[in-house]
Image (cartoon, rainbow, N blue to C red; front, side, top):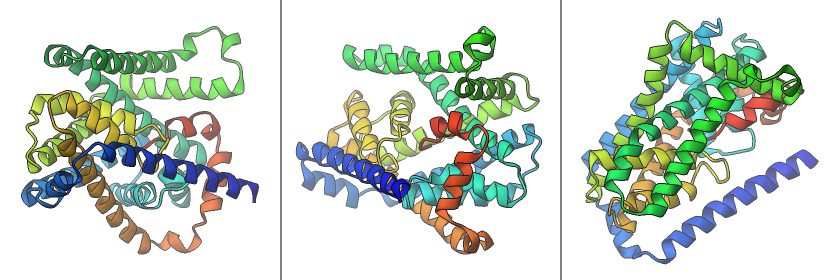
Length: 339
């Protein structure tokens, strides 16, 4: 009962934060102009953006399949994609304390995958995506310096990028620290996880394909945002989309709101504003991107309704099983943010 109360309280706080941020952003905007952008978006460009995000699910699944194979788990491509789509349903449409990652682990377990491999596979998938995002932000810094004159914004994005690089380097090299410093059980989980990700990216046979897919996923997101921006009449260049959308994605991944709503909108308005995009148009891009995420989630929901596992599913059991799985307490919760 106490656990359910905590879950409800956490969900309520996230919901209130999402609503509060959206209301705060909307206060200073021309709502009629915002509505005009939303209803008059070029349908062809909206469909293009939707197609890109749907295509992204195949790339996501391909990356995850590579990771599972490196862990010695043979995951059928179609089965993996079905599990991934179901997890997006839970993440986007029915946000809860369980989340899509725990559901992914649970579904893997139903297919006979042991908990350690399920946890490692999902967590490594998340962190590999994060590394790809940080790599794009590092590559975009020179362009950011040459195209943006707001020193405070450059400092903020640059600091966020450097923090990401430092965090990644520390995690990947934890096992090189003296044994006495990493002997604690909680730290040991991160040490093993860092060694696993380092192996995947530096030593596995498919490392180039794995890292390339991690980059491609975020490039596709930037391309979808570019299409949506053009669809609402915003003058956003390809280069600006490439350097300003990754920070938006990174901030959206912080699990403090419902499926990133509110945080994504605030970050999109702030970042696209650096390229001269009016707030109403930037917010339209974010809301349309959110709508696309919901549509993709609904596809996952339809797949879930037809799934044989649905009859035996229990949110409480999935959450409890995931929390009891080896390593989940030390790394799963840390990296299971919105993609």
